[in-house]
Every structure is written in structure tokens, then in C-alpha cells.
View 1: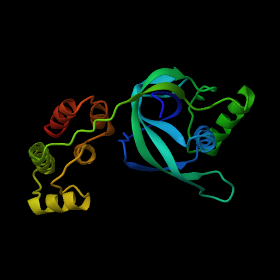
View 2: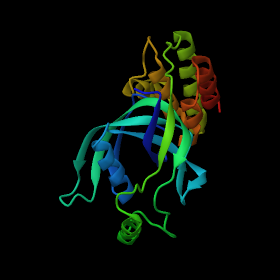
View 3: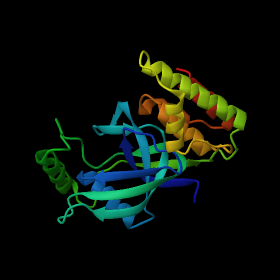
Length: 235
């Protein structure tokens, strides 16, 4: 895969980590166009946590670091093709170098869950030219994956931090250690050979919001990652 690419960008209220699975229901015209375009090329688009402090042509803006998602399944939900269901898998992380704004501005008081809102977007797209892209695109640079193994002793320390955090959050309700062990087993996190993926999953269990996970995604080395995980689980 080239180190630089132009990608469609899908800002979401979540963080996708490499190798994680992400199912999505697609109903907005701009993202149906994004999926259609992806299916005609490499089936790839970028998933970014949306940055609530910024906009692009009125639409929610992405954080600068995200993860490439590869579409592995795509099907219509209804017989008229108004909604799509896709399954995706996270691949490489990337950093946005340059934003390519969407062709249409966000309508005032836009409601994506209303028929009126969707019709307004479709009308704006028709006026701007249906060949133009309604979704954000970006020139991105791929980020090298952290491929070192997580030391078992460090992993065990992180698991203990997670347990302490869950117990503290539940207070005054008592949480049994056996229940926490069962949760770890449910998410396949009882291991003697921890990897980066286990660390990502533990962070997802310990996060209060997607914003807690963005610094984890942005870590540039194993040392940096483990320090950020300790900070997240120690809050």
C-alpha cells in the first residue's frame, strides 16, 4: 500500500483501531455516495473521530489521525436501496495532510433522520452537479504500525489498573473480582501473550467516551502507547 493516498473520510462518534471490526448502517445520501464510490475502487475509506470544535463547509470535521476501513460486506437493507448495511475491518492508521471539502454546505437545521433533511441534501447535490463528491476527502499519509509485543508484566499491570477503575466507577455498588474476570473472558482478554490489539480492546472497555481513545490511536511508539494507556486507566 502506498504511503500517501487520497481517501474518502467518514467522521464518526467513535475511534476505530487497526484490525477491529466495524458494522455501519448507511442512510445519508453523502455516505451512500461514499460507499458506492468505494465499491468501485479499493473498498477503502478513512474513519476518524469527529472533532466537535471544527467544521468543514458546515459539516462535522475529522480529527487528524484516523484508521483506514476496508469494506468486507455491503448489502441493501430495503428493497428500494435507501439504506445500506456494511461490514468493515480496520487497517492502517493515517494522518490527514490536507482536507478536500465536500461539494455542498450543510443545510441550516439539517436533520439526517428526517425525510425533509435528506431531500434538501439531494437537492443541493443536484444543483452543484451529481458527479461532485458530497463527502469529505483528504490527502493522507500512512502511519507505521506499532508491531512490538506488549510485555506480560506490563499487561498484567494494565489489567489491574482497569479493574481498579471499574471498581471505583461502580462505588458504592460492589463489583466482584469474579465478575471482572468473566468480563475479560467474554472479550477474550485473558491471555499470556498480549499484543497491541489486546491493549486497544482493554482501553475500549475502560474509556468513558470516544475522546478518551483518540490519544491511544495517536500513540507513535510502544512506550508512548503504554504511557497513554496508563493515563487513561488511571483516571
